[in-house]
Length: 299
Image (cartoon, rainbow, N blue to C red):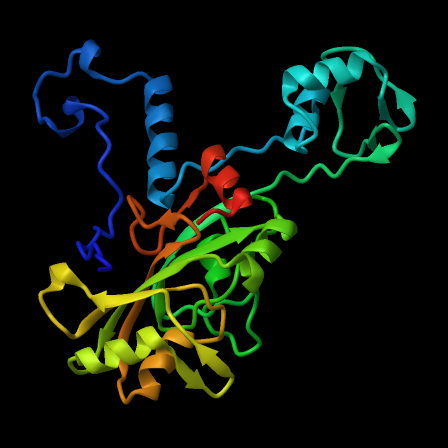
């Protein structure tokens, strides 16, 4: 039986403890109670990050150390990069560099063993998509797109992996890793997705069984992996469905085929990723372990 956690997440970010003195009114204006200019700057910088919903990476367009450049480009760790530099396989503007701590400019051409290195770091951003945004890079009709929600996530140009239609909410992954995006959307790799479906009328046990056995849509046969009522809802208006199909609007079309209307559709699981601690309209960067699991594609 598929069990869905339907507990609603708060749309506001978690409160972070800064200082009790900030909330306490006092007539004591002694010097010890007045934050220094340095502390005030730290607070406002931190406050700005929380407001955006995600601690953004900082980017320095000035000169950076060569080993850091190689690490950001995914060539090697910084320690391993130092070994590469000392071995004489790294060149800057066609000049071999063996000096540790060497700094490069944004305009420099860096080569590893004769091949130019792409400095763009791979980014993986997970968004909890709200309703009313279309999944496209830009829209000639001027409609809101998901790109506006992740525009501050990183300086690299990232792309949505797959699609969620305008009225569907939930998990949407963005990346500039073309190989991973192709892998996650290709039917052969069968990336698992789970949706929480809210219907306009109770779903009968007979129709649940029909969906389990598979239905024939306009573009072919489709069968889910699991489907059942959402236990915690206590209602047969709500269903959890798990499937691997990447067909366009497949969940909505399955239920429409059987005479139901989908009032609300929320993707709560995608390829091993969940909405845990990710409020609606917010995003976060995946950690190294999550990226590794995605590349292994075991979920």
